[in-house]
Every structure is written in C-alpha cells, then in structure tokens.
Image (cartoon, rainbow, N blue to C red; front, side, top):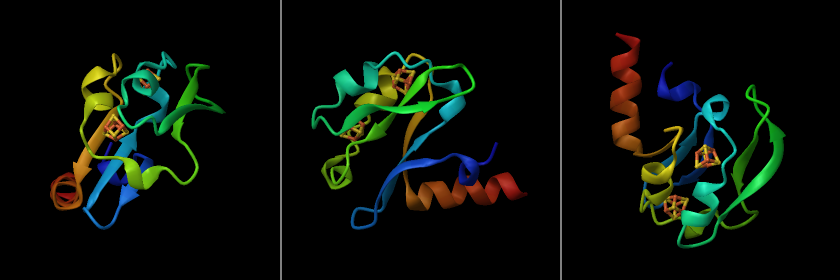
Length: 97
Ligand code: SF4
Ligand code: SF4
C-alpha cells in the first residue's frame, strides 16, 4: 500500500509533517491516547475491519502535535506513522516506480 492511500490523522503544514493511521490494523487498545504527551488523541466512534474503535485527533488540537513519535513507537500494531512531507513524497514516488 502506498503512503498516499493511508489516511492522515493530522497534517502540520507549518512544520511540514503528517500523522498517518493505517486504520484497519488498529486493535483499539488506546495506548496511543495514553502515551501522547500533549493529550491530543482520543478514541473515536468509527469501527474498523477488526471491529475496533480507532483513535482520532481531538477537534482543534492538531496543531499541538509535536511529531514526537511516542504514539508511533508505542503502538503495538504498528499502525501510526509520523512522516515529514518530503520523506512522504519520496516514499510515494518510490511506490509508483
Ligand atoms: S507524535 Fe507525539 S504529540 Fe503527535 S500525536 Fe503522536 S504522541 Fe501525540
Ligand atoms: S496504539 Fe495503535 S492499536 Fe492501539 S489504539 Fe492506538 S493506533 Fe490503535
């Protein structure tokens, strides 16, 4: 799957990074919600293919993401990814080849 097909939970245009969630890999464990030091994540009401509720960014809080990657490193299902946009474009371009 190319990065361009994985939904973004948030995008920080000023600092040029995005947080992606590979929705159907999420087991709904809430670890990311508890690990985020800025408290911007919460569990939403959307169910995925594993019949798990998936996290979302609290309304209006996206700008507080620091790209610290705690959610990425802590997720037991490896479904959260912080990527710099340039890195993202490179990966997407490679996926097209
Ligand atoms: S990268 Fe850090 S600040 Fe951003 S959502 Fe993940 S844990 Fe929170
Ligand atoms: S830590 Fe990973 S598996 Fe757990 S709720 Fe967050 S995204 Fe889903």
